Figure 1 (tube, rainbow over the protein chains, first blue to last red):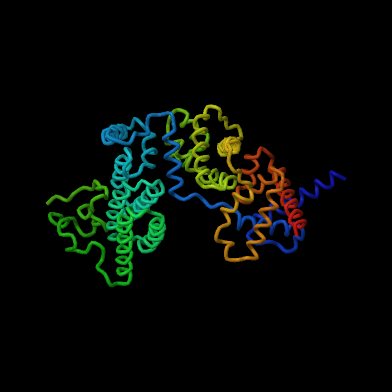
Figure 2 (cartoon, each protein chain N blue to C red):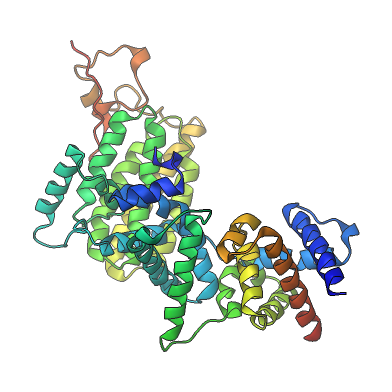
Amino acid sequence: MRFGRTDRERERAEDLERLLADSGFDARQGEVRRVAELADVMRRNLAPPSPTAAVVRRVRARVWEGLPRATAAPRGALRPAYALAVLALVVLGSVTGVAFVAEAALPGDALYPVKRGLEQAQVALSSDDAALAAAFADRRLEEIEALTSLERWDDVGAAVDSYEAIIEELAGLEGTSVEGQLESHLEVLERVRRQAPEAALPGLDRAIERAKLGRDEARERREGKGPPPHAPGQDKKEDEGSEAPEASRTPRRPGSLPPGWPKKLTPTATP
Amino acid sequence: MLESLRDAELVERARRGEAEAYGELYRRYFDPIFRYLRTRVADEGDAEDLAATVFLRAYQSLGRYRERGWPFSAFLYQIARHALVDHYRRPRDEADLAEAERIGSGERIEDDVGRRETVARIRKALAGLTPDYQEVIRLRLLLDLPTETAAQWMGRSEGALRVLLYRALEALRKRLGEGR
């Protein structure tokens, strides 16, 4: 009798597995179908959400701070010297973990210059500037989000500076879906602003304004109202002395880089 | 490069002090571990504390990890369960499954009173199930882990896990029927 029950259960369990694997439920499955429907209700309504990028970054920073290695830097007077020392180690390739640790660094952290240095290396090696700029823009936004969640209001200003710089660059690039990206940035920034104290509002407002401007620029360009990105004459400084053939030009040229965007080590044209 | 390595290879590198290898393991498994913890504690801050504890303890225990058909994610899961035991030992309000899973429901049910009531009844019924039944529902349905992974985490065969899930859902359905 008991063996029979187990066999029946096993069969129903297999049916349930098949039902759970399918997108829709088969009405012929009777009792198993009712169980599967209950499972579906739970899946749709009780599943915990994935952690936000800020949570991933925050926990990672805490994990790495706690590891029994001297990679977490003290904040304070020794910060620049420490960061330089670590950067030197990265260059020498003797500490492979530093790159990961630095990835979690925020403006104001000792390892933040290392993080930006690594980004510079990425720019130098990348052939897709637009994708990289878009990724760095998201990263700058995450930094603002993380700093506000940690209530490190003193560092938010510097994070906004970097954010403004990369958004300015991003808005001038071709081949990116800037408009949609900045739309979602605005949602995040507005949310962060709602939770921020009075003192942090000017900085966050600056970021919001920059994101709106970038979004509007991208929209106008899409609708054919604005100038093309980096149109001739827009940036006289970069054109001086540059005689690179038209075909070799990329949407962004080194001379157009605003402060905060890592300089790419591209060969320069000789006059 | 690291993305292409198997977990066991990453563990081996992390043991030798290659922190980036451990970083890759973190990237792979933070999401399911954190979401699992979210099904067990109501407060997101507590889940963050626990997640940090899990990945720290796991790093410190890498020497004890042996693959042998036991995936690294299952190793992390075991550490998470121990961390939860410690967490619950502390004098604080323990969130039962029903309470913790309220986080996952959120706005999706707020706009539908009938549905919200149904989900509230499910939560209540869930809290009355045995720990094994609750756990299989968490892993298989709420985290949506594949049967193979859920079975590895719970130390059961895939067939046994499927039967356990079916029994858990049947028990839940009965409890829901009784509660009417």
